[in-house]
Length: 525
Image 1 (cartoon, rainbow, N blue to C red):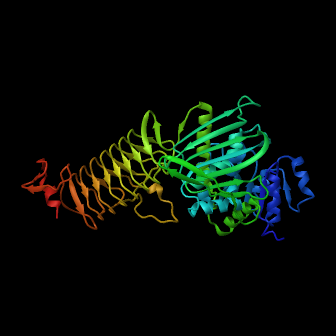
Image 2 (image 1 turned 180 degrees about the vertical axis):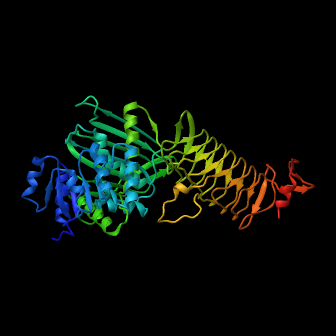
Image 3 (image 1 turned 135 degrees about the vertical axis):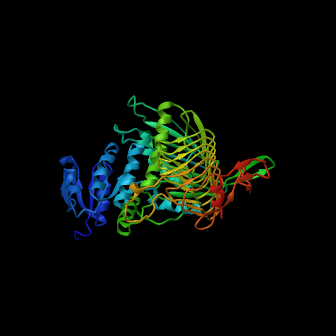
């Protein structure tokens, strides 16, 4: 075995770490096992021909180590992962990625800046039976997914550093999200603390989705027998994944519901055992990590997937502690102001969103964004970081309002229009310190596919035509068209073109009059 092949270090060789060590070694990738406890390392010394360390710095300073696998208690993940990424290592972190959302975000940003692989150990995604189950669901075999429930229970291993929700539920939360492809609109968790007054030993979490789907996850380490059952109810058929079963792990139930008027009658049918590829899930997961290191492609369970799972777990924890339903991604409340966000929207805290604002599919509100009341953000919109958007603004599909842009009240941004924020961007040169601020004044309209060069001011109630390229400041009420944009007339506040006579613009619809200086009239060409 060459040193080139053996380039992965494992940190933590306890309850789960020993399984990771075996798979890494069998795949010819394990170079070093590190654990603070020399006693924990002893069972491995005669089993594996690898290096051993009791100091994390030995791992991070070894130039022959390309990737690090972290299998330590969850509260240590952030610090160890930070050190690994700072050392330029690719990284696999056992679930959860971190215990705090801000910590997970920092790890994702750091991995991106370092161009490092960041993978989270959500093992169910790599189980051959689960892969087959997801394939059947995606093909439409069971129809529309209506509900999912998961039971993950056993007697032990009982932890003191985390409750059962954080120990058992991450796998199932991650899998539910990958199947439904939407975040819950609300979550509710309840549980029981029987062995320790502050650590739940059993929890049940209920999720509601705007699509109408429902899910619940029940986890317990105080159960008389081991059960790992995942059930998906479709509009046509049902799937049951039972990981405890040795033979029929995946069953398809082709039950049918017959409707006689308003009366449903179930017709039960025999379960069909589903054939799937063989293979150890953990080995598949480690292979995926090694392949990501080789190809530089993001793994299925990357940092973003881990962060989304963490957000949902954190909402469940809040529900558990506060004994109430948490609005996760539907109608939310921010500083007493309610707004609507579609389940696919991503909203990074802290940010401010005003009452009555609507945020639609796949839109990303980045941290530091300040959005006023009664705004409408369409599909695939990005705002932030640190942008200010006034009241009653409408931002249509596929628009990005990046740092440096300020929209005053009543601004309309047409589909796919573009704000730039740097004059001469280069991918390989960082120029955010050269950012030039852009201001769009009250009531301005920017048409579809227009481009606004950074550093300009778009005047009040001005009108930028579709496809125009604006290179300089636009006066109030001006109508700009073309590439490069030129003033071709003047617009009323009601959106109608003004008729100009002797320096006075008159609206033929609302009769509003606007006095224009000779200089402004002369600009119109």
